[in-house]
Image (cartoon, rainbow, N blue to C red; front, side, top):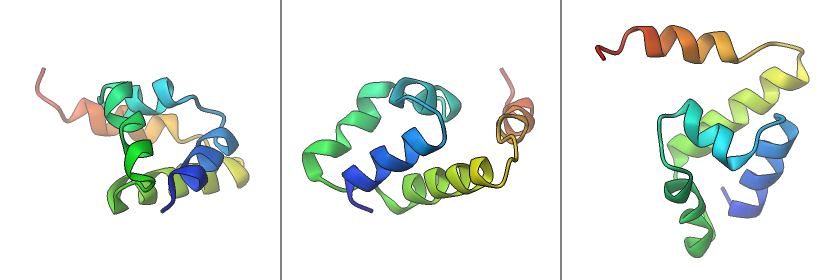
Amino acid sequence: MPYSEFQRLIGKAGLSIKEFAALLDMKPNSITNYSKQGVVPMHIAVIVALISTMKDEGLDFYPVFEKIKSYSPE
């Protein structure tokens, strides 16, 4: 996915890059570094496409991330 499309979908989901990175337990710089390549990896593209589609459908994606995080031993 082109980085510009990734940015559009992030905005469509109502998120900033910082918020998106936090959902994935990543550093924002790890996400913005993809802009240098001009594309984002498939797994990041799938996630942003899913959450922007969920937002379009009026579904809250935050509970999904909370459930996943509850599985992590911290």
